[in-house]
Image (tube, rainbow, N blue to C red; front, side, top):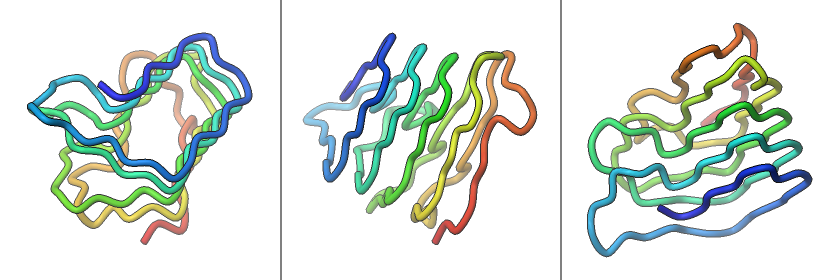
Length: 118
């Protein structure tokens, strides 16, 4: 509902918030075949249902940091695809998040690194 990235390389996106006027089941951010992406200092309204806030598909070298939320979110990020790797989560506040990481179809073990989260 907020940002859809496909075939993107070398993008930095920071200091933003996505709000919703009406419920939406889509993830706030979708990345498909993206490389060297940095998203930092952000928050977003939660998607309807049990959907992830961020969906990463066949993407690598993605860094998500500085996330904070004032509402409960079921899932933060879902990573899919055997090409996904080097997904880094650090410095995020997951106190309102049910599950920080879910792995979808084809996600390799070790594709996601999570550290120093609040």
